[in-house]
Length: 377
Image (cartoon, rainbow, N blue to C red):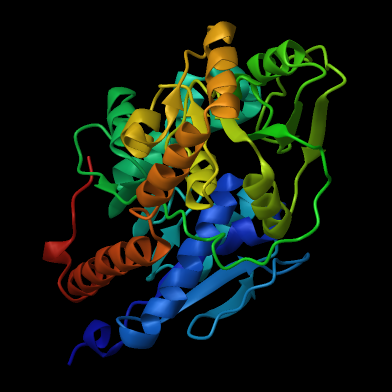
């Protein structure tokens, strides 16, 4: 057997940079996929899988059985991802779950959640925007596999030239991660409407503030979410009526409590690659009012009410309907649970394992016979 054929099998290395920062929605998705991979390996140990993270600094707590965590390199953040990570794992498949990947690496599987940096540039800081627009097409062109979370995101990535004419795997996020979470105490507001998301321009928080003003003295309006200043450009400050409450980040147990207590979730976002908060709400029976934009009609179907993100009166009317029509509330709760049940992390994990198994086998074949190496234009 030649030297290459005698070498160890290709590993799957999960890019664990996301474990070193305060979790965003993208990071929460990455953690769920990682846990599903760990669970799936118990039944299908298709490859050795490890998580690699920067050597220094605190890490998020993980409860993994079949996946080891190792810390490598000297750098942090972007420099660690682009230099230390690929240097440490030159022959391995690197699974990248948070949009970016080491551009010099030849064996990436990368999850690109959306094309919002192109569709909603005003939501992002200038440096971040320029970096992503340069990096994403380069990564996609060289990657072994590109994954995204919805047909809408795949379409937008193609239209902006990020993935050009190559195949893109669509693997939807799950929505069942809060079902087994114990509820926790959360601030009490009486009757309230909930908003979940980073307060950046495309999330349309200004419209939510206007809803609060319209219902002043009748309902509270509660905002969960915070801005990562290294990524996003904060939305323009809006007048804050006295019935508007900004909670910032909350834990999953508190979030579950808020969904279960809310009259409804109002989700006026103009652009979403997938839109996880409405499905989270639906999984817990919370009625959803959404803007009919981007991926939302495809993901939510007829289990939500829809209102124009530019027309305040439509949101006022929809909220009034949910408040006054008990059969409608019950119907939305039932339809929402059924819709959310279509999206499970178990199914997502199985899809990632199928892709990774195929990619590892192809990668090992290329190592043994370079004539089979894929050509990337």
